[in-house]
Image (cartoon, rainbow, N blue to C red; front, side, top):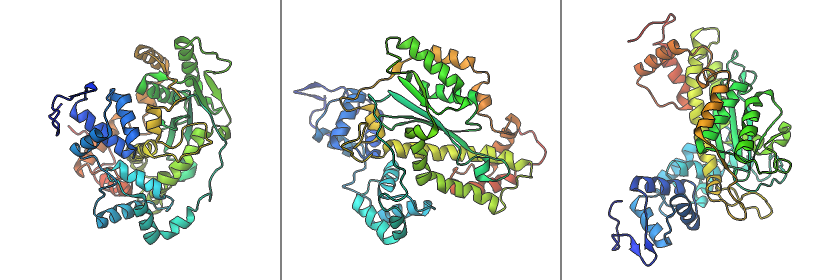
Length: 429
């Protein structure tokens, strides 16, 4: 590790030698803690959990200064900070994002602002949004849930608020499938898929989620749809093989509930729509309403499916980052985690909670994936977007300079690319 800005160059003190991770790894970790707006004790706990590094408050302060970690005590100048908040207000077409949401979004971009400052800016420039978000208004009431800790229960579900019926754009759709940890509220996976009701697709999404951390939960929870065939078989089989001593009567490997009872993941869709989803849907539909998209033109649906799933996934990734880094308010009577971020709670569960994850092997995951009737590449292929069209679309994207895929610029990019996609296929070498 590079020389540090103190008198103890060897990193040795009364507590022994400190094994610091490489600078780039430590920098990324400290900036991640800043995105989550963690307290000093929480940051110290994460360093201990992730790197077995035990340091004191003063050393953490020194490292934060060394690696230029943003701090709420040193926000940007007032005019710049105000503009940052107003930019988030401008992106929020539905005017449904409150102070906490905006704080988390800006923290993910490296800007830490005082809560009172953001609240005052909203009160001055967007008072109608504050009134609409009055505490308790239009909130879905949920009953208490209880888990042993992270990876006790994972909840999976599809989201179809942007399906063909919802968009009404001649048949195109952007469906989502998500998997979420119950105890910590940590979002494990959120992906746009051609068909969230296809058993092969959901099987691959499940294995993708498991492969990220090489663990399965004690219990997987879904609704009673027909798409969970492979998921049910694989979760049950791996639980039995890797944790045969767990009592299946008290801790079943799989639960199927009615959608209204699968609240940990069903409730998430409300927050997705509130923060990102409604705005995205408005933008997507505007292309049809404004005449940018014509479902009767054979090229338009193909280009829609080449472009908008990519934009949609970027939005989903932003939401996952926001959600996992946002702080859940403290609730004394809540059995599951509260008062921390989902990411921190999932990584460092507070006692008496503990990590319930069951470790699995990559070879088993590969073998199970090979059993799925359709390969992953096939189930993730969008209608009409075969290898030939993908080449034509990539060429068109190159021709317009490969602009950043931003939802608000989506239809502008779509229209610009159309000029470089001929009606009949051409071969680009």
